[in-house]
Image 1 (cartoon, rainbow, N blue to C red):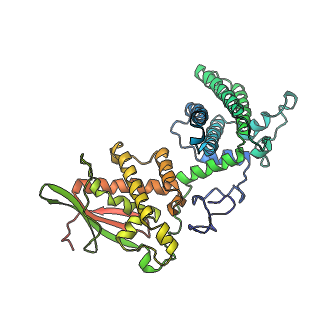
Image 2: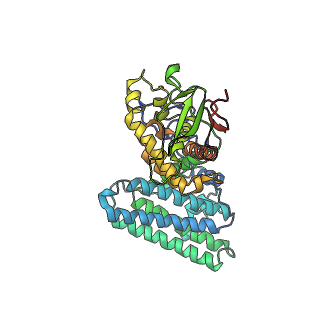
Image 3: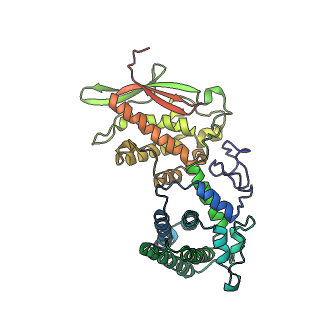
Length: 419
C-alpha cells in the first residue's frame, strides 16, 4: 500500500500504477505515513507476540538486530556492487532494531518519546521533557546530511551502537538492570542516541524505517483478516476463477510407474504427474499448492492455463501475468516451498511460516501482480496447501474443494465413481 493512500480507497491491484503490498495500517498513522514516536511505541506494543514477557528476549533480539546491521555492512564491503539490496537491507534492519528497542522500553515501562528527548538534552535540561509527546516525530531528532556518507562513518557508528547494546547485555546478565530502573533508562538513552547517529551516517530516515517496519509487521500479522478484491474481479465470467470448484486428484499405476491425474467436472486437466526425481517424495501431488495459491492469493497462472481462464480480453495481462514466464515463476515457487516443507515435516503441527521463506518468495515474484499480496496471504496459502497435501498423500486420492469466494480449501475422501 502506498504510504499516501488509504487501503480503503485502493483495495485491488492496478497494473497502471506502482503499488506496494495491500496492507491495512493502524488508523493512528497519517495518510502521508507520519506518526509520532509515542504512536510508534503504542503500535509496536500491539504487535509484541514474543512468548516470554520479561526483558530477556527483547534484549537478545536487540543485540541480534544490531548484529544484522553489522552483517549487512560486511556483505557490502565484501561483495561491493554485487550486493544491490544494501540500502533496502539497512532500512529494514534499522526498522527491526527500532522495534526491539521500543518493545524493550514498553516491557520496562519506559516512555519511548521521553528516552528520545533525553538522548539530545544536556544535563541541565535532563528533566525538561514532555512524556508521550504527540507532536514529536523521528525526523525532529535527525540531522540527515542529504549527501553520500563515507562508508567508514557508518561502520564507526554501527560499532558504537553495538558497543552500547553490548554494555546493556552485560549489565542485564549481571542482574543490575532489574534492580535499578534508572540504570536501564540511562542505557536506553545511550542506545537511542547511537541508533540515530547510525541512521544519520547511513542517510536513512528513521521515521521511514519505522513506517516500513509497521508495514512489514501488519503484512504478516494484520489486526484483522481482510482479503483484497481478486485480480480478475473485473474480467468476463469466462476469464475469472469461479466462486467454487471441486477437483478429483488420484494416484494411478501403470506397470511399475505411478503417476497422479487431476480431474475437474469429470474431465482430466493437465498432464499425468510424476515426482520427476530419483528419490520419491510425492511431489506428483503438488498441484494442490496451485489451488491454494488461487484460493488465498487470487493468483495462479498455472491454474488459469489448465482451466482455460487466461485473461485474453486484456492482452497485457494475458502476456505478462498469465503467460509462460509467469507459469514458470509459479512452478518455481511451488518447488521452492515444497523443498522447504520436506525439511520441516511438511509443516505438520506448525501454525506459522518463517519470515525468511516468505521474504524469499516475495523477492522471487517481484514484478508480478501477486507481489501485491500480503505476507499473511502467502502464509495461509502455504499452510493450507501442505495440509491438503498431507491428506492426499495419506489417502492417495480424494476431492479437493476450492472456494475462491470465501478463501477456503478442504479435502474429502472419495473415489471418482462417487457421483
